[in-house]
Length: 249
Image (cartoon, rainbow, N blue to C red; front, side, top):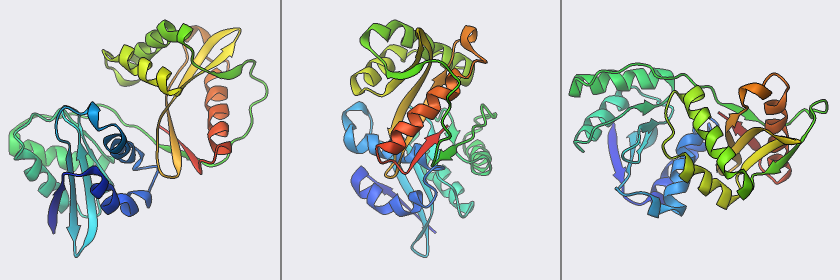
């Protein structure tokens, strides 16, 4: 097996796209990262880590890291590739805050990294990814979907922070910047029933789909179906616009 690093995100995408698109929903995070590197390179202060491992010219692993963020791994077809990625990444001599990967690969990488650095590790979160290709309409929930507005800014910032605490157990210090970006791009949506009661974000696109995340409903509005209605209507809208699927997670 051989490991190859890339400097050019476009060349990297051309090399890995077939491998990643074979399981597009699972690899949606990697595809979003590559898309951002291609279309918004000014956001990155450091050169990203872009690598593949090949065996007999077939890709068996894809790895991306945009410092200071976590390493993100693809589905791994040969776990020996993880050892190679860990050793190569160790050469950068940078602190690694974590790894996002399918569970088996994440554990294998954490063990390999520990053997190289003595850096301890623990499971922080388990997440599922769902791929939706058709939507059952929800008629019984009052309200309607609308785009977020400038007048919603403080509400969105508060909910963004609350989502981080409840769902990710993190303090979202970049909430203002995140909300600003999504308002400018028109990618934040609210379910409105006289007042806003739930939110969902379009957080990125893959070649054939779109990613819906940051779904949040304040405690006082829960158990009324607002989040389900919000996600269903947004997903239906994305499918009507030509996306083959909506990826939730």
